[in-house]
Image (tube, rainbow over all chains, first blue to last red; front, side):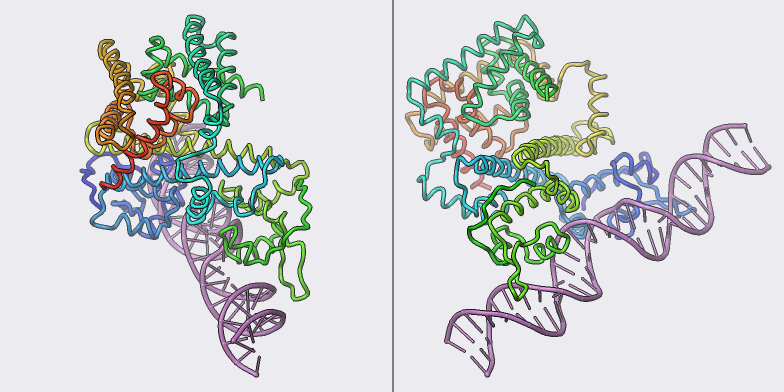
Length: 260
Length: 260
DNA sequence: CTTGACATTCACCTTACGTCATCGTTTATG
DNA sequence: CATAAACGATGACGTAAGGTGAATGTCAAG
């Protein structure tokens, strides 16, 4: 492992390090015992002292741990002389993205299960486990493609395509109307009841395409402001609309959750 | 647990069930031993046989397991006579959404760490662990607010705000230009080299605000088409643009990944 | 009648710590 | 200065969720 940290800086006691990292002292004992994170200094009384470099290494360890690597694996990874922190951090980002996708599949499977339980569809037994293994998923997607051809279809797109052209235009116009109405309502402030009601309508309108949970809607709200593409489109309707939308969505979600 | 499944249907051997669910036979033994999933029938030779209802219950168990519930907790949850599958499925969706958020924070922490390691910023030690515990995160956000006031600020928004008004207008115009140029290029087809190059520029332009990975960009691509709000704004530029953008993004990402 | 696939139970092993217990050290306080 | 509280060390045992293997039973097919 290549770590260019001139460690001159501060040293931490075992408890300091543990509480900074949000872990127990015992864990650091354990990591010392198995040679995963050995303090560079031991005072005469055998007290452990950690330097700044251990901070980074511990972060690495906990990253990998979060990704369900075994401590043994982590050790070999970190001991690898070819090991480049930045490269591995980038790889970790990818792993996390994979995990996000997996969770998204799970959410999808849950939706299907709910649908099945409500008796509206007949789910085959194997579908129950679609969210699980990679191979099963690959296999499953193959069948889907065999059924629907090679187009990148999914339910919301199919639902959209099933609308008449008339209806599509209508929906688009509706969306734009909302943006305009929300823009007009900006001076009232994001916590104005009228604005809150507008947000509710906006949200309910979405449900047609997409099963948008409150949490999901909140995420979208942030994106309205933060993603440059969306931000730009909102800002052209009216300067400040992107940020206003974010605030209004967050506020609406908060109110809605308080109801429950 | 309320499960209205008239189990008349097929019965499965232990191995069949295990392989359907992608788990080991031993796990089913274990679940039987601790009374978590007991087969309804044992033939004379003590062989276990499972029915359709066990499929659903096992799915529930594995769902909760994925969410790091202990088997003990899972047992009490499923034994609760008040237990409503659909309600809990909805709760699980929420938990999964939380997990997604947590991962998003991790990705953010990784980005900061990379930034720090490249010597471009000075990260405080505690920031190393920002992705971890909830309390730490709450604490941390408090400090942020103390520093920046009560606005819901984040790096990309700060970055945006740090631009001059002139520059902001410029960026918005740029985004719109892209949309227009991409719309104009639609007849060429999403796999046209010119379109691919446009997508690259679009992507690179994003990097200014947001560290958009290829995977993330692909997700965004799907949203352009699937999220009604964004779909609507794209469709007003030109009908069919939303779907075209999705295809073009997916194609671009595929090409880009093939390069690696 | 044997072989191979599948089933059973019993029993010990593993990982990554938690949880004492027992003891030494340091520091704050009366 | 004495003493308690807080922190440190080591050692030993416990735990959850299975893995792994041994010894043995069952059954259909060749």
